[in-house]
Image 1 (cartoon, rainbow, N blue to C red):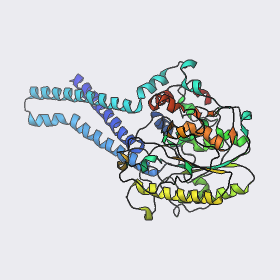
Image 2: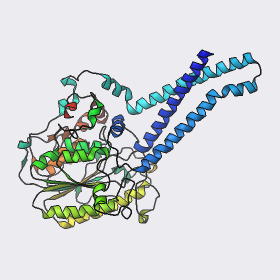
Image 3: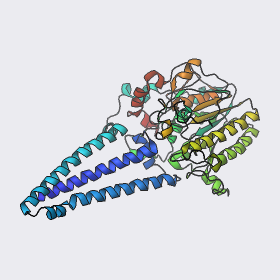
Image 4: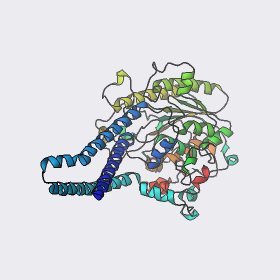
Length: 485
């Protein structure tokens, strides 16, 4: 009987763990779609102040499902003997049926745990991650993907014959797939591509397929990776990748004024550390607007903070102020109203009752801002609109879209994207050298970090290697990368 008690407890433990993993996967699928394990770990380790409480509510719902299922499991496993006693009167048969029941439950528990563990590994590649993390060996230079492909110019060797100011709009989770002919129904209120250059195949690549990962790539031409030697270094007291060089470091040292406007909290995911530490950005975020008495209820967007309409209105004021100064500048605007789970849109855009209303609304607001910038008629001002990554998950209306790509559009840039490049694959790391060249920077190559400028005829790494191989290489341990922490 002692052995049966141990088997019973083991079965209950394994089943409970299976339930936790299974529900956790459902939760991640709901909020992230295809996810990276490093994305999850990064947000666990980072400052999560300012998170949308709607995501917390969803998390609590799934936690409730876990608790209910484990409680039900407890009654099935531990109260089954009472039911057996009621049905079967013979003590010997009771013991036999009880033992048989526990063995069957144990076997089913092992099968279920094997299945959910396999599923979790397939989706997260956790075994490969643990294997790399557990290894104390440095990666040989010849096998270090980052080392073999990394190249940045000396700041002193970046030349600016003519400096060009730029406005960069980050549109949360905005992808070209929203307007695909395969979308049901195809949305109409898209961001205008009139007079714009656009790459058709901007991939949402590994370690860049979440906002801070994309921003890291835009800064450094690098993916956002964990320091395998010590996870505590992920939140470095010295800053965000303090030893890596950002294109904004170069712009700042060449006299550019840098500004970040957003309606959410810049503390979330280390954005404040990133933008203040690389480029010395002036940051105006939710905390800034609260401090100066703006009414969040009157300008409410998602649970992240102020609406995109408010953010873009404030950005217009900031832009006009920057234009009046004598310095070249880069203004980065982060929008958030198309964020999971349902985004935000005002009543006049309530046509679908789901995220499509937010997509329509944000497209309308961004188009108005594009028109505003174009009407300023400033020759030395470029405008770039970029999605940070694909939408988290697969909403029903785009499930039929065969290939999903991140939105991008470039207005009034002095360089032209080569014709063949327009249909080649790129990733977020290629935005770094592109931004530097948009602002007039010139150096002895078209590369920054791992990124290749969109204005170069050279193929990007993801085009040369293919998406699958590129993603696999990006996720590998890099001893060279860890020196950036």
